[in-house]
Length: 502
Ligand code: ATP
Ligand code: MG
View 1 (cartoon, rainbow, N blue to C red):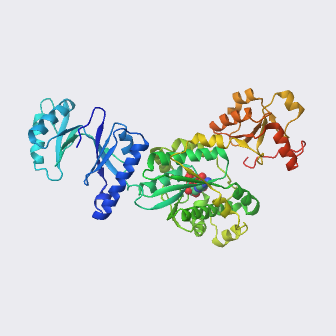
View 2: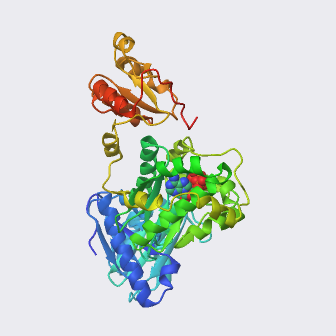
View 3: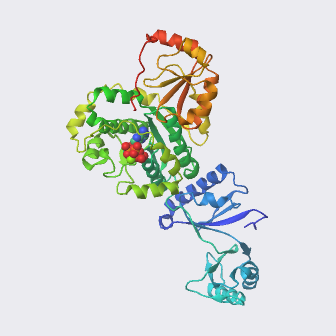
């Protein structure tokens, strides 16, 4: 045991009863995984002096004060205590050092000394309680039932350790001991909290996101996934699989009875999620469904969606109320981001079916081409969440080579150029005016900006994306836009196409 150096700190880490009651072989595996996860967590957060020692009945972790935050978020840690001092396992030394450490702290307060023996230490715990308890006495009062300060002395064959705090960890099992699953992540409150519960039970989790609403939405969901990856997922490299679902949305709008759109959409999510799970050797998909929360989550509708799953479906929130889920999202750290995601609700038909019959859903789903889904899953993007900086996604998706249906086009050139020619339906907001005023634009629309070369408008589109807008710059500027119009057969007299999301 190395005594703590100036700013280094040691922590005593306790494992949960669920780990310690396992057979020796299983416990060994779980503890080794926890050691590995803690090493990864300390390194990921650049905690100095990092070391993890497996002492079987406990772990000893070296770090500095910043390790506290890591220990609070590593699943499998039941509780932990910052160690305040060490002493050889002899009565006089324990009393002398214990007095130095706690004399001030217990002044004017009630206290108790609790000594614990672990391993082969011969000293009687009761003697330590009495002798150190008496030595701390002047100016303080012993209260064994409800002390304000509890001085703990853990006596081990290697020496005695002192601590007075017991800080709860997140509990659960070390991530990775329960195999692998994929969580369907929409970025809303539910799916992030659902993922957290499954991580907490020791599952190595990867994420699948079906993008229904463009780049700005995607960036928010990536941010949610990054919170789960950076704060709660240690010992492996979590991935986010991004599947473009815009073609699915288009097909649903045109081919499926609107009442069934939600239920069929969920089936397609189950199918695509299962395909990803099977490809990465995962045993289950995880969803944030809670019984009766929305129309697609009635018991009958869940039963009608279920047959689309090719792997086990885990629904850890099935019995929870929305308020409880939202409260839990604060613990997870996704609350603020999920609030923003709520603004991007896609595809809510007026009167969705609430008690779908399986045959009717089969029939509606059967209207879609079987060729629709597999290529979209094949062409998905896989992001390494730990490595990824959310800003990277901005630069990658700043340019666009077409005008999406319903987009608002903004001509960023001076007004005399706009008067001479502009894209049909485009509004004129010269660059400076746009920079000052874009915050007042409607958030749920998609914007395509153009200027003579598409470069200055790219800078503004980037600013808009950073502020949460879906905005792009037309690659190549005015000339390229005119060429694209010609190729599409769009004439200058074409009316403005309405936004399907309005
Ligand atoms: P959340 O349930 O996360 O708040 P939501 O309310 O928008 O999101 P629901 O319609 O309740 O989503 O969908 C139920 C579940 O289906 C979600 O919890 C999530 O697991 C999955 N899901 C929904 N939309 C998506 C999506 N775009 N990408 C991935 N999974 C999704
Ligand atoms: Mg939901």
